[in-house]
Amino acid sequence: MKRPVGAEKKRVKRSSGSASTAARDSGSDAPPRKKGVKKDLFQMFAEKVRDHKGLESRWAVMEQARVEYFRGKDFVNFIKNNPECKEVLEEDKDLDTEDIANVLLEKNLLVRCDRVTKTLRPGKKKLSTWPAHLEIFREDQAFSETDAFFAWTFEKRHPLWQTLLSFFWPVLTLAICLFPVYPHRCKLIVLYSCAGILLMILSLLFVRAVAFGAMWILLGKRVWFFPNILAEEATLKELFRFWPKKDEEEPPKWTSRLFYTVVAVVVVMLLRRHAPDEAARARYQRRMSNIIDDVLEWSPKLALSGLMENQPPVNITEAANNSSDAASPDHTEEADVDETQSEEEAEDWTNSNIKT
Image (cartoon, rainbow, N blue to C red; front, top):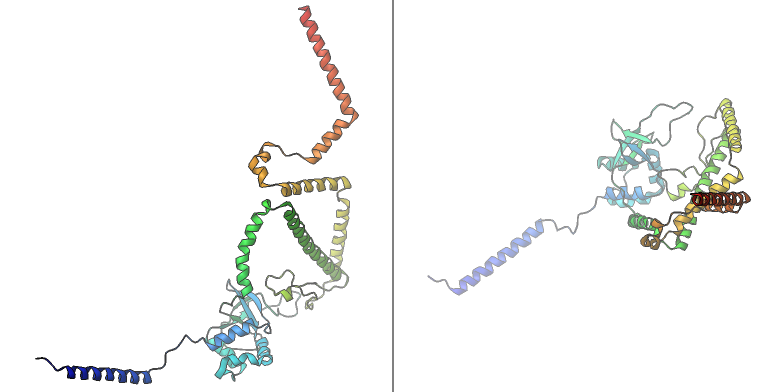
């Protein structure tokens, strides 16, 4: 039996209407769709604080890994001097500094550490302000200001210049490998630039060591100018800081100062006594100049044509010695004697042949 067409149309309209009302009801009860995963506010706060230059931090070794850490009292002073950093927390911006730090510890964004060496070293009055070796604090992971250290547990975001530098290193390596095929002028620029930078660094380290030795022997003070010049982890501003840190160790004994004074005088006297003379210095200079000339004058054309393989290397010093020996009168006399001996032997041989 066929159903009427009008009934089918009414049923379709009724079903579509019921589906639309159900969708509206379900949409009113269910939460709206999120456009993206919302980032943790405390994670954003931790990243902002870590990237800020106002919080003093250092690097240390903790359980065979390098970590960046700070002191509890420095964190309190940082939040007090920079309250705008708490604006990232929105509703939780009114929390105290201790509560914020405890939340960071609960979310494993921080971990409380303790120094490994807890005893004073000989000759020191107090423990190191920034220890180089840390361990995880075995007791309660809670915030404290007094002699407490806290290390970041998440990876720090790399700035843009570090990303660009990572692409630049392979190019620099390739350029160093292609140094032999550079034009002669480029080779001279690279050679003298590198030699100048190396000479500047060595001169700076030498003057720095001499100043330290003089201050230590004469005044008993440990004064290191450019104290961070050899640091493994330091910013550009800290690396070229000129003024030294305050000496917190005990002054050295006069006996040790006298002993090292005698050692320094003996070393200087030995160096002056066994210094090379002018002739030796000239020989060393010629050898080095020959080596540098071989490097600078090499070109791929010589390698491809086989001239470097077929022609033996010529030493300038030996050529000069040979030319000087050839020009000497002793050498000419020896040559004349050899010629007369050969002529006499030839005459004897002809006479013996005639007699026979």
